[in-house]
Image (cartoon, rainbow, N blue to C red; front, side, top):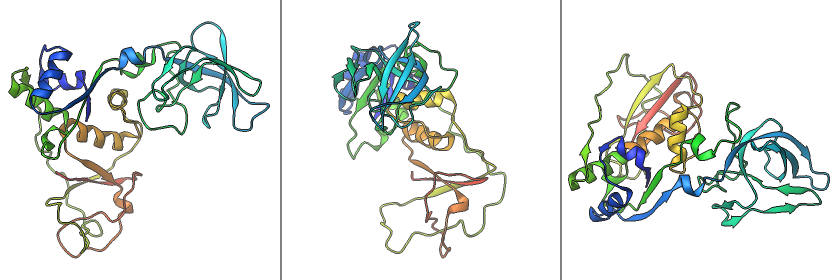
Length: 305
C-alpha cells in the first residue's frame, strides 16, 4: 500500500516529520517497507520533445531521434519504443543518469553505427509502473526542459506499508490517517460521505444479474449504482498526478476514479459498461457476467465493501 505525504495530509492535520510518521506507522502495527523521496530519486529526468524520429538505417525496430531537452541543442538518441515518433513529448534521461527501473546508469553509446546520447524513458524504467510497452507520452503543452517530477507532481515523499489480512482498515489512506490520529500524531479531518440520492428509477433486466451457483460465498455484500449519461475521457491532471505518484498508470476518467476511491478510502470499486453486461436474472443478487473498461452512454458501477 503506497501513499504520498501530501495525500495523507488531506486526511490528517499534522506537523509531524517524515521520520516521526514512519515511527508511528510501525508503532500502530503497520509495517513500514520503505520511504522514498521521489523528487530526489528522479530529479535528473526532464520533459523532452522528439523533433524527428527516423528509421534506423541498420535496424528495423529502432529509430534515430533528434531530441530537444531544453539545452539549446538537439540530442541524438536511438530508441526502440514502438511509440517513438516525431512531435512526441516524453521523458528524457541525460548520459550519467541512474535508471532505477533497470538498476543501471545510462551513458553515451553507439548502437548499430548510430550515436545515442541518452534515453527516452518508459514508466517501468523510472520505477513508476510496470508499463514497458512504450515510452511515456506527455501532453503537447508540457514544458520542454522541466523536471519530470515537477511536471508530474511526484516530487514528494512516498510511504510503502505492508498490509496483513487483519488490517483491511489500512488499505486506504483515510484508514491510515485515522490510525495515526488515534496514536496522537495529529487530528483526523472529517470527510463528507453523505449519500447521493438517486434521480431516476432502477434499471430493469438485463442489469439485475446473478451470482452463479458455484460463486464463492466469501462476498457477503455486492452493491452497485447505475449511472446514465456518462462521457468518458482523460481524468483531470491532478488525479493523474496522484496515481502516478504511487506507481499507477492513468487510464481514463472512469478507471482513475475507481482507483482513487479504492486507494483513498479502502473501498474496492470497479466500473462496468452496462451495455455489455450479459446474462438473465433469476434472483436478487446482482453479478456482472462480462467485464469491460469501455463505457458507452450508460454504465454500471459496482462496489465490494
